[in-house]
Image 1 (tube, helix red, strand yellow):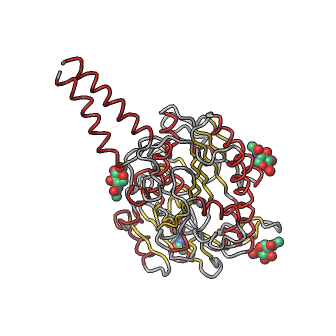
Image 2 (spheres, rainbow, N blue to C red; image 1 turned 135 degrees about the vertical axis):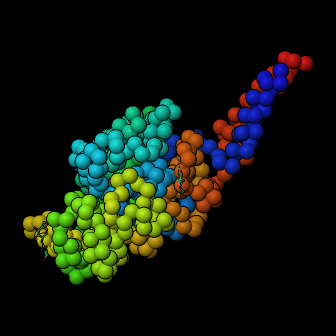
Image 3 (tube, protein in one colour; image 1 turned 180 degrees about the vertical axis):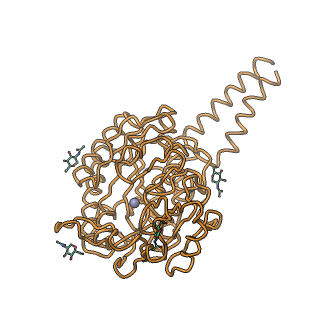
Length: 442
Ligand SMILES: *[C@@H]1O[C@H](CO)[C@@H](O)[C@H](O)[C@H]1NC(C)=O
Ligand SMILES: *[C@@H]1O[C@H](CO)[C@@H](O)[C@H](O)[C@H]1NC(C)=O
Ligand SMILES: *[C@@H]1O[C@H](CO)[C@@H](O)[C@H](O)[C@H]1NC(C)=O
Ligand SMILES: *[C@@H]1O[C@H](CO)[C@@H](O)[C@H](O)[C@H]1NC(C)=O
Ligand SMILES: [Zn+2]
C-alpha cells in the first residue's frame, strides 16, 4: 500500500515543485527575421503592423546574441537554448578536420550532414518526437534530418525569399495552426539582412525593407482577427543578430601582408571571425605574426574568452581571429566578397555582423503577442538563449537542459488565470488517483 501511495504523492510533489516552469499548450507561430537590428523599429509611426504587435504584446529592449553574432550559430541558439560551444554550430562556415567536410552557409549538400546539426536537439525535433507537428517555411535546416527527425512540413530555404513567399507562408501557417494540422509554425525571412549587408544599417533601402515587412505584419494582424485566433495563438518575432556599418576598403585587414598564406592548410570565412588551421609546425609562427596586427585579436583555442561560450566547440580551429567592430578580415582586397549590384560583381558590402556579441550594433529584437503574453509591456533585455524556454513553455513541451534563463523571461508571460490548464489538469487527476487508491485500502 505504501508503494502504491508513494508514486502519486511523488508525482504531485514533482508537479508542484516543478510548477515554477509553467506549461501552456497553445499553437505557436514564430518568425525569424534575419539581421533585424533591435532599433530598426524605434520609430513606429510609419509601421502600423509592428505598432499593433507592440501595443498588444511585449517588446524587449534588445536581445544579446550568442558569440559569434552570425546567422547559423544564432539560429541554433534560438532553437536549442544553448550556446555555441554546446550545440556545436560555431560558424556560417565550418570545417571538420576528421571527415574533411565543409559546412557552407546556403544550400550546399554537405551542410545537410547530421554531423553539423546533431550537437543539440532543436525545439522542432522535440515537438515532432512528442507527436506535435511543426510546419516550417524557408527555415535554414528544416530540410535536414536531425537526430533522425524532420518537421512534418518544410518549404526548403531559398536565397532571399520574396515578400510574396512571406505572405503566402503566413497564410499557409495560419491555416495549419487553425485546423490543428500543425501545433507550431516557423517562418524565416532574409531580406532585412541582405539589404543591411549591401547598403548598410542606416540606408534608405533598410527603411524600405522594414516597411515592406510591416505590410506583411499588417496582413498577419488582419488574418488573426478574421480567423478569431487572437486569444488562441501565440506569435513571437525575433532576429539572430544586428548589423553595423563597415568601410571595407579602409577598414580591412589583409592577412597576406602578415603571414605566408601557404602556411595555412584551411581558412574558413572572411569578415569578422576567421578560422585558421595552420600547418602543424607553423601554428606558433602564425600566432606570433598575427598577434601584433592592429584592429583584430588572434586566439589559440584555450585563450578564447570564456564569456564567448565558444572555445569548447568541436569545429573550433587552432587559431581564431576576431575583428574589432567595423573591421573586416580577408586574405587581401581581391578576395573581398563583392556582390552583383547590377553592374557585374563589383558591389561593395556596406554592413556586416559577427562581432563581439556585447557590441551594441549586434543586438537583435524580440516581440511577442498572444494569450500567454502581457499586453503593452516594454521589458528589459534578454539573451538569444532565453527565447527557447518561452517557446517551450507556451507550446507545451518540457525544455531540454539549456543555457537560457527562465527568470529573465518569466515576467513577459501573462500567467493569466490561476494555473495553466495542463498543470491544473494533471494535479487534479493525480489527486483523484491518489484518493481512489487510498479508498481501496480503507
Ligand atoms: C517564392 O517567390 C518566388 C518569387 O516571388 C517564386 O518564383 C517562387 O515560386 C516562390 N516559392 C514558393 C514555394 O512559392
Ligand atoms: C611562402 O611559403 C612557400 C612554401 O613554404 C615558399 O615557397 C614561399 O617562398 C614563401 N613565401 C614567402 C614570401 O616567404
Ligand atoms: C555597384 O557598386 C560599385 C562599387 O560600390 C559602385 O561604384 C557602382 O556605382 C554600383 N552600381 C550600382 C548600379 O549601384
Ligand atoms: C549550458 O547548458 C548545457 C546543457 O545543459 C550545460 O551542459 C552547460 O554546462 C551550460 N553552460 C553553462 C556555461 O552554463
Ligand atoms: Zn543572420
